[in-house]
Image 1 (spheres, helix red, strand yellow):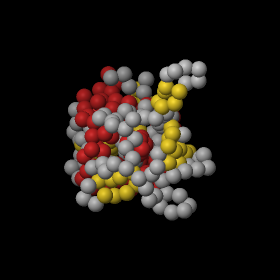
Image 2 (cartoon, helix red, strand yellow):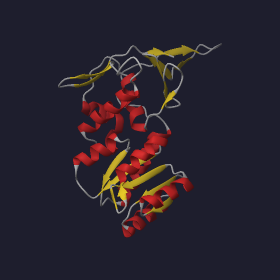
Image 3 (cartoon, helix red, strand yellow):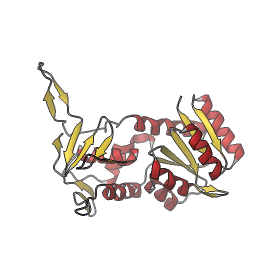
Length: 251
């Protein structure tokens, strides 16, 4: 059973959501304050956390920021406000999705399942036109897809969902950041609009926003920077979208 840790100060709403998730075979831990959240977090080490944006003793964004310093746990934000800035900031902090309250238990469960599926494995992007390089299997005539590639001194392992720098050190990426990098690596030197990237990243089960992509690109560029300078191969194509110009090679 996957464990969900929910931080929501509205006790009635929290109980309703917890009951729905338990009916869907999740193990649920609840917290009504930030202090209680961190106690529960250390106890259960959840697979996903649900964070309310506004809390009596803090803000969900601050909790998300602290979480991202130590963990890549999946994060789903809840908010009763229809503020685009809050959504964008939350996603830029590393959240995997954002749901406006009130939401139906069915939608909440679907969103969580979608996030956990993406966390479990790097999804195959729809309508992919890039062919994977193949290499023969020793002693056989068959070929297998290459699941790791190098570019600009970095190495991305698609199967393990890991990114390593030139020294071999792993670079921590959120699920959304890794998914974006995977899409870019599989489509080098192609202009990809924000709409195309949203479709490839999330599919029809996720309601995205154009500026979400801008935030993800900004975060990814920071993590692809080196001692020699900022990332120069993830380019903005003015009025169109983004292009990944690095030379991609099979690892």
